[in-house]
Amino acid sequence: MTLRFLGTTSDGGDCPTLYAVEGTDEILVQGDVETDPEHLAQLRGVKPTEAFVRVPRELLARFAPRSEPSQLMPFGEVAHVFTDFRHTAWRLETRRGYATDRCSEPWARWKAGEDVDHDEPDAWRRNVAEQVARGKTFGRVRLVDQPLTQGQQFLLARAPSNVAVGDEVRYLWRAEAERLGLPDFDFWLIDSRTLLRFVFDEQDTTLGVVVCEDPAEVLAACQARDAAWHHAVAAVDFAERVRSTM
Image 1 (cartoon, rainbow, N blue to C red):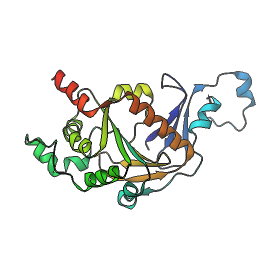
Image 2 (cartoon, rainbow, N blue to C red):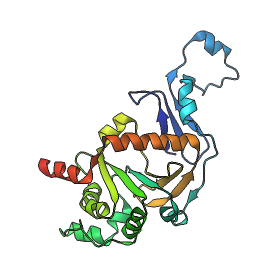
Image 3 (cartoon, rainbow, N blue to C red):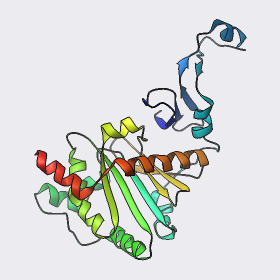
Image 4 (cartoon, rainbow, N blue to C red):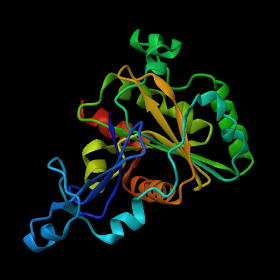
């Protein structure tokens, strides 16, 4: 089973930390091992397989989930939020590639060397333009590697099509994201109150989304958004930086 980063109170990002054990209702706690013999002697019902760690109360107060984990849902069942939301839809993109991109018609044209940066708006982009015209905002930060993967290069080439309809796209190096302690999973944050967390298989295919309104998880997503948005670079500027290094 995979672990999902929930949060840390360590500036170094290593310890202490909370993780959710995906597919279960369990939380994994990372902290300094308890070695005080007086404390260990007072523990009750200790099994040989158990270990004990110390974490600050703040870690649990800020990041421990306060509700039961939600079930995985098909993305189509929640797609209505992108027209129903009231003010902001923001995304963090963390993967090195997406199966939906590799199976798309623009991907084939891009691989053939064609220009795909100013294609006519598709259904998604038409909706973005419509919602932005109503005063709402779309934004996203994409984490990228050095060097960029093919999937990341493709999305960078396509970014002007997003920006043209009002979907503000920014880029952040993965190493910087790790330094900031950002999550390592994709999500949409809707109106700063609803979290849509994507679940993928090993081939980068979307299996569905988990909808969460747990205050601790939503707060952590809001904090991740603010940090990522502050440190990320606008797509047009990032593309120029990449070109200058090639």
